[in-house]
Image (spheres, rainbow, N blue to C red):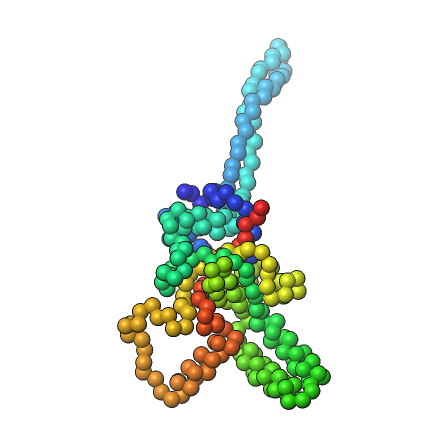
Length: 267
């Protein structure tokens, strides 16, 4: 199948496209590489007769001449939005999208379908001072002081986090997927989504991604030679980073995926 026309029968609304990874996989699946634009050229030929009148000293003569008139038209098409469709079609043709969640191995492609929940770290970082101020204004008793203390700790943690957007996907079978995405690859700014929907975006969404983390406790290869050499300082940092992950990152019950596409069907 060529890249210039996708055979997908459905219409899709893309919320997220990781253009670099989509291009990388497309280049591997199609021998000619990644098509960035499509040029269409049309040429119409027309023949018209002209009458040329010549004045010669003695006689006046008319010579007939036929000129070929050619009209050319060029159209350039942006092929960037064909890439995700072509990739999706090709992956389905080659049966590379794994559907059995429990049988997934690290690096497998899967398609998670369900409702999605967003968590915009940049917005949280901006809102923390206001949240602390609101908590102090409403402070009453020990529980309020504890809440303020927790907010202080949370503020110290989130200010070091990258300004990414976290997304959780829950499917109909009770599986939970977690991922973080780059805001610039989202079709809608995360702040706009938060204002419109709140944390949960309604509708049935599909997330095509690469599995890169199992649930805590599910070890794919327990006999692998994992690194064990450490020291007291590294151990304390590892303990801190693990707890930070549980607090503001991937939950222990969630599978971790790196998304290529997030989309929904239209109609």
